[in-house]
Length: 194
Image (cartoon, rainbow, N blue to C red; front, side, top):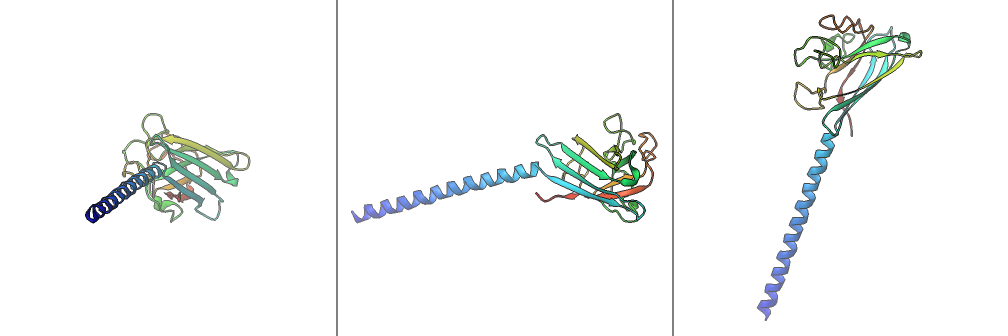
């Protein structure tokens, strides 16, 4: 009888341990799913400031991965001396704003295409376009694309690129950069805290 009681206790303990293992595994798999979801909603940002003392440039560019894998960009700029005009904005290949933005080098062009207008024919992955500024010198732009990712492979990853604001407008035809003028603003694209 004592032996049967001991066997029942052992069997009960085995059942409790097995159930605890299943619950633990289930919680771990749910944690993995949550991590995958947060990766799908990756965010990045660039804080834009002037490259020289002669022009005040401020801005914020936010990037967020959407549920379909595309990246949405929301850009806001303020350049009082450029009120009622437009300025060109591009992504440049290096996240370095030194030497008045020149350390950013050329337009980010991982697909080796000609410079052009975003969404029309050939264009660089960094050819964002012209931003119209109002009477206070404030302007914004939004776009969503599958040409960019946040932290994926080198042909699509926007992290550690520079957002460059030019003094003029992009003509969308001159090679290799659209004759957009000097670099008056710069910000580096970094992973954002979630």
